[in-house]
Picture 1: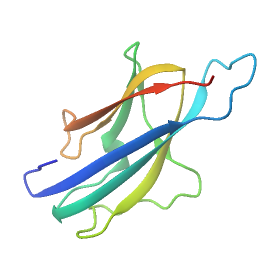
Picture 2 (picture 1 turned 90 degrees about the vertical axis):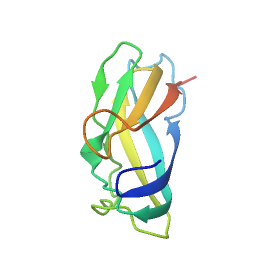
Picture 3 (picture 1 turned 60 degrees about the vertical axis):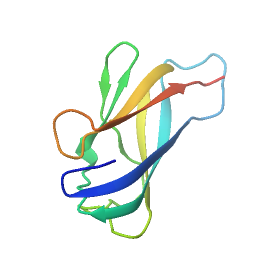
Length: 116
């Protein structure tokens, strides 16, 4: 991802959800792992720049997983930074967005929350 003052390779995996239970709950806790690598220059990093939208257009604000250390204000150069975000959301399709420069997302990742 190219930004005005830097570059980064951003990868997201997940979501991880709790094991299936019956009956399925209306919402589950989804955990996403974010990795930032090959950083050069300045890449701003604010948790508020991450949002999630589901297939109904609802917006969710992920938070850090409990016990997770807050990432630095800028992604560290020449190292990989990994942190985990979580949100309680319904099952179905969604998209995790990152807007490191504010405004419109620079990158988005599609996912499906399944609990079966």
